[in-house]
Length: 77
Image 1 (cartoon, rainbow, N blue to C red):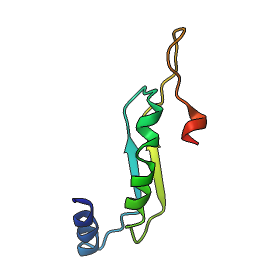
Image 2 (tube, rainbow, N blue to C red):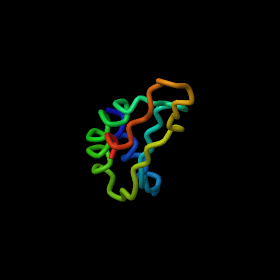
Image 3 (cartoon, rainbow, N blue to C red):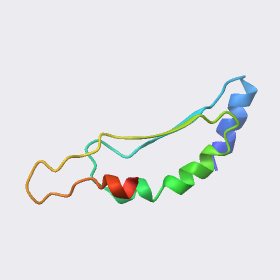
Image 4 (cartoon, one colour):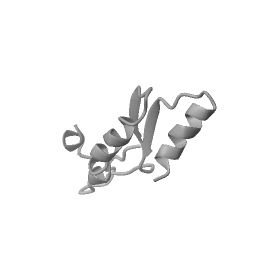
């Protein structure tokens, strides 16, 4: 896995890796794409000695047309 190498390099150069950002894509309504990775990202974040944040982003979509799928905020929560 590449992530332990990233942690090693930050230590080697005196840097701090304090957070993770998950970007799914702009205008996505695919709630499951976010929810299925939450546990994995939490496990990765716990490997960071200076962990401060986990950011989920990507421009959540809005169903502008009738009968389009909306992002399920309750499911994400």
